[in-house]
Length: 163
Image (cartoon, rainbow, N blue to C red; front, side):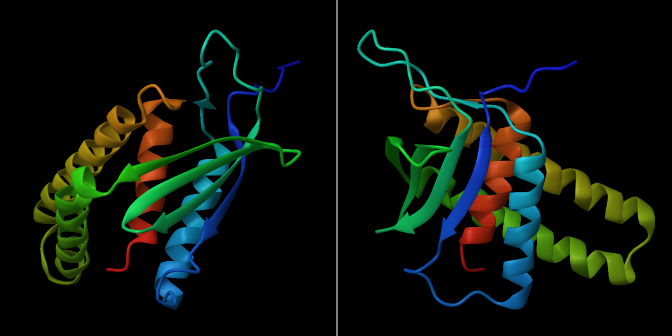
């Protein structure tokens, strides 16, 4: 029998109260991103000042406030265990490039041969990986995540930003 890891996110809430209402497409992107993230993730908090971090699983409230990405982390029981804010500056160009390549991909699927579609999709994955690496770097010392979790979180961050 496999034991369930506590180094994970068990719940994700998106606070979009400070944002313009989402389109149905953006809402769907968010739902898919949250579902994928909850299905498989690795998320741990490092200890601080010689103290061990409270054990997970964790609940994450993700929000955009004052052009900053906010990670508000609690235990499943609702006890707050941490909050950190990340500047969107390091993500801006990557997110912009990601949106542009996604639009190119959608357009390509309608009119280009498979080989060209595949080339655009490879470029899209490369930009997505770049965003995931940036997120891992920005979370260093705040939260420990694997590359797959970082990729899924980056997808969710993109779904938070109005296109």
